Amino acid sequence: MEHSLKYKIGIIGLGYVGLSLAQLFLEKGSTVYGIDVEERKINMLQKRQSYLSDFSKNDIRKLFSNNSFHIGCTFDVIEKVDVIIICVPTPLDELDQPDLRYVVSAAESSIPYLRRGQLVVLESSTFPGTCEELLKPILESTGLLIGRDISLAYSPERIDPGSTWELGKIPKVVGGVTPSCTAYAKQVYGSAFEQTVVVSSPRVAEMTKLLENCQRFLNISFMNSLLKICEELNVSLWEVIEAADTKPYGFTKYYPGPGIGGHCIPVDPLYLLWKSRKLNLDLPFIELSHQVNEDMPGYIVERVAKSLRPKELKESSVLVIGVTYKKDVNDIRESIALPIIEQLLESGVHVGYFDPYVNELKIGETMLHAMPLTARNVKKYDCTLILTDHSNIPYELLVMHTPVVIDTRNATAKMANRKNVILL
Ligand SMILES: NC(=O)c1ccc[n+]([C@@H]2O[C@H](COP(=O)([O-])OP(=O)(O)OC[C@H]3O[C@@H](n4cnc5c(N)ncnc54)[C@H](O)[C@@H]3O)[C@@H](O)[C@H]2O)c1
Image (cartoon, rainbow, N blue to C red):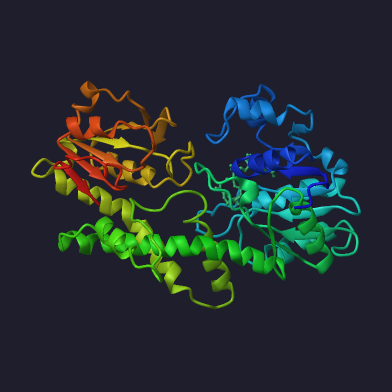
């Protein structure tokens, strides 16, 4: 690690990725200028408040402790920095195609302040070719040439919200447009990360991120596609996976669930699918996995209906546990719980929910409020549906006081009495 090097770093987008990166560079002695277009977030940071479950109030306070963290909504600070790192969202549009408007807007807003000698890095997940085909022309519209006047690289973000992985210990892949761009990016990331992994182009770095996420998408979808047959065979897929995992080589564990949510795993593969279609190529594995994932909410609702029979869905009440897209985070973007709850509501189910990270939830026109998990409240429901297995949820209480518990995460694994638990 090139510890002695300190930089002035501009980070565009102070969400899960940008704020974590700011924290790391600040810890390593660099100065960070953070820009976010969402005024609410800047105001909260200014009041030393957190909007992310991975950051406590104390973590936020610490970011400012050396007077090296400067934040705002305007881009003029770009003039002062050595490095500009773009960490803005890359969602899908209504046609499930890449929506790069945030990346374009971040780059275009920086243009008036770009100067010779700066390095621009894109960290947002995207299809191979984004840096060279989309960002390079925008940056070069200033008259500054990449590789001669300014540098451009891609470095995929690998943070895992809710987990205990230390960001600086996760190897950082970097690929620049030219060898000098790569060398600059390697030096900058080397000042904060223990290991940098140099690849031969931004395209390789972009594709690396997509490979990582596609692998999870395909394998989890494959597990989910096995749920029905395992149920017919009266076999627990969870038990099968643990048994297969005793093989000392050649088997990697992936677990089933209620469907894949979040803004990365179900989204990034569709960026690759879009790119492959542009090249007149098929990616049937991704299409199939996407279909499996789209079908999951319907399957879960069907399973709830089956467990309640002869009572009909429209006469039933279901308590949903966990609505965020993954365990121990406060992020509901693309959470699979949302379409599942929507389908339950559409079927006339009375839905209640609990999530320690989400106090209220708007599904269509329906506003739901998290209810306190007391025995009295839990007893009012015909069925408990565990969708996200947050830590510190009293799973025993749920199993004790609802007639049926549908557990899509094996959250009740350690309980001795699971007679009323249906493990999907
Ligand atoms: N969160 C993760 O676990 C994770 C992991 C790896 C990669 N990624 C990728 O990193 C990127 C960012 O993800 P995130 O989770 O941090 O998103 P986020 O929504 O939490 O944060 C992005 C921030 O960018 C801001 N923003 C949007 N447009 C802007 C602009 N033009 N200028 C300045 N700020 C702007 C938004 O207000 C928001 O605060 C995405 O491409 C995502 O796929 C995320």
